[in-house]
Each structure stands twice: as C-alpha cells, then as structure tokens.
Amino acid sequence: MRGQVATAINRGLLAKLDGSVKCVDCGKPARVYDHRDYAHPLDVDPVCKRCNQKRGPASNYLSDSIVHATITEPIAKNISLLANSEKRSKSAMIRILLEEALDLRERKSTSTP
Image (tube, rainbow, N blue to C red; front, side, top):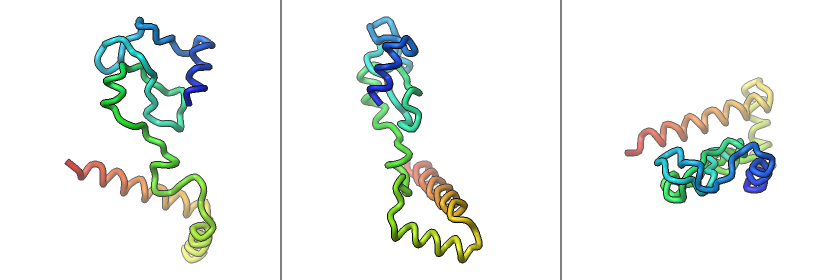
C-alpha cells in the first residue's frame, strides 16, 4: 500500500504531507495517509499521527471477513455440495455466504456498546 501511495505522491496525484495539508479529523498538520479499506489502496485520508492512532486499523476485507480470499479445498468441497443441494452455482453460493457473513459482522458490530 505504501508503495502505491508513494508513487501517487511522486506523480502529484496525492499531496506531499509537508505540514501544509491538514488532518481531516482535527485540522492539525497531517503526517500520514490513512487507509480505511485496503481493497482501495489510493482511497486515503490525510491525518495526523494522533488521529491515525485513534482511528485504529483499517478494514481489510480479505483478511477481516469470515471468508478469506483463498478458499481451502475442504471448504470448496462443502460449497460445491451446498450449491448442488440448493441447485445454485458455486459462485452464487459463495456470494450468498459472503453476504450472510457480512450481515452477521454488521449485526455484531452494531449490537456491541
């Protein structure tokens, strides 16, 4: 991610964080670019170090979600069996399972105080 951000800065697509760019959260000079979602490497916010720390880790859909980018063979076999029993394609079953996993994660995050 840093390499892509550095390249974007060098090409003038993102501003250099030289003290003239303000933190989008508090207005102090931004020192880093914060990723909220690593799936979008250039979708970043300039933030100060304190606000970056307060924001916490970014969301990484592939490692954060219940279903990982690489589906292991046993899971793939179960998806195939499930797809056959439901008379759906494997890709449709993966999409349905991902949607259910994301719904579960959202319900879980909204239910905690």
